[in-house]
Length: 329
Ligand SMILES: Cc1cc2nc3c(=O)[nH]c(=O)nc-3n(C[C@H](O)[C@H](O)[C@H](O)COP(=O)(O)OP(=O)(O)OC[C@H]3O[C@@H](n4cnc5c(N)ncnc54)[C@H](O)[C@@H]3O)c2cc1C
Image (cartoon, rainbow, N blue to C red):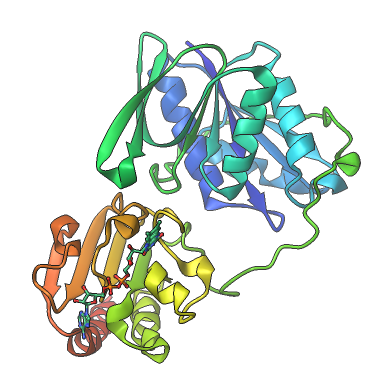
């Protein structure tokens, strides 16, 4: 039996979806290890503690609340010191982070401070006799490596959307903690956060992604992807690197090895060839639909549903069909 400390990500004063995914993954880990407790660490500006109830709803037995103006933005140095201090108490067998930009920055800092190992960007795990065995994609997803984590505490990060938030309500005790380092004295400061796609769903939070490639021929034709995303209602638009390099879409939309890793319930690939570097960022999507006029396009090898056809004929029909299905409820 081992307790799990989960780092719950906050952005703009609100919990991110990945925070609920991480608590869900933490719950799974605690249960697999024989029924330990899940403690979530929640850091932010004054008032962030009000979000503790959401973490309890998804399986946190306790919430450690760190409120300070110095945590209004991500504060790597003070957070790493505080998480490491909590883990140094000996209470925890495991610490779990999200493999997001923030988690990818924070988790190795904590691992270095404690001198312990970190299994990063896991898509799943099991526990065998107290040892975590994590699944990690190597070589752009061609190889799935099993990483055995030894040492205590064992640190791991889970890929966004690898775990869907699952409610497991608890009455969590909330404890206020203080920072292990002065958050206002950090040498690294986030001075501004520029939100791409203002008002739109973040790729990591969207259950449906409509991604476009060079097959769309011109930036204005991404309207087809926008329209399909709007028809679904809970979707975000992504792109290949060929498209973002052309300047058709912002780089924040790029999915793949050198872009975002996504794992939505539904991924619609529109005029995308399926290069290995693109697949690296989306192959864990639950259901993949591909539209391509080339029946031999590599994307069809991993697609659950393939439509061989011209995107300019298929997309309007698909948009109409989704709208009609939505209208019927
Ligand atoms: C180091 C490195 C890192 C990289 N990282 C990434 C990354 O993170 N993400 C990424 O996406 N790529 C990445 N790439 C680039 C990658 O190799 C591909 O070049 C890129 O993914 C191709 O994008 P695409 O599918 O949009 O374009 P293309 O490969 O040109 O494919 C266009 C597809 O559209 C189809 N098509 C054309 N017209 C139509 C039509 N009218 N109707 C239907 N289908 C049509 C074609 O049949 C074709 O399959 C990387 C490459 C390198 C070397």
